[in-house]
Length: 131
Image (cartoon, rainbow, N blue to C red):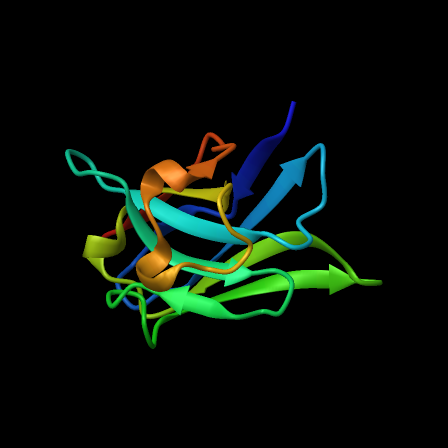
């Protein structure tokens, strides 16, 4: 069964950095739109960033622009992992971060796309930003 596995979360102080990693068990990540999402306590899950693994085109939520960078690890024309480098972290970045694949299209939709278009959610990785 296909499932995503997220890792790299942790606890950092404001201004710190973390790099999250996303891999899929059961298949490689070629020719997909892979999204990163987060869910803060008591809030709905929201899109943070997306990458089209075929051409590397990206989308970022306004809250992530200038601080987060999404990338893909491509070796021998095969994408194995997608990363989210998070810099200048703020307390409001706290939450569980998930990655998932867009099941409707291989290019990142404008605005990141609808949550229900994404699937194969992993268990997530916790990110906590506090003094």
